[in-house]
Length: 118
Image (cartoon, rainbow, N blue to C red; front, side):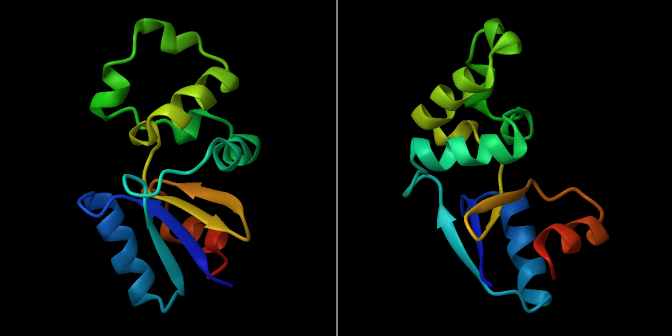
């Protein structure tokens, strides 16, 4: 089963993840978040599976430009923000069979393998 990887081409973490997938013989489809942002329904599914917290790109400019009230936002408020600005989403996002299974690429390799079922 193929993996969908949502990210942006100039993101170092995304490039590292794609190199790792290539080295491990994984079949994947890369989806550029800037060119093809996910729709609200897709993001809502990711939040249902992972909650909003691990989906937050806290190191990006878009996140820093949000007001302090972001600290108390509900998942629904995060859904609104993610749907308006895909750069608020942590990258990469790994999706299998329509279900988000992992965000970012900092976990132990064994954990990554388990979540991606490689």
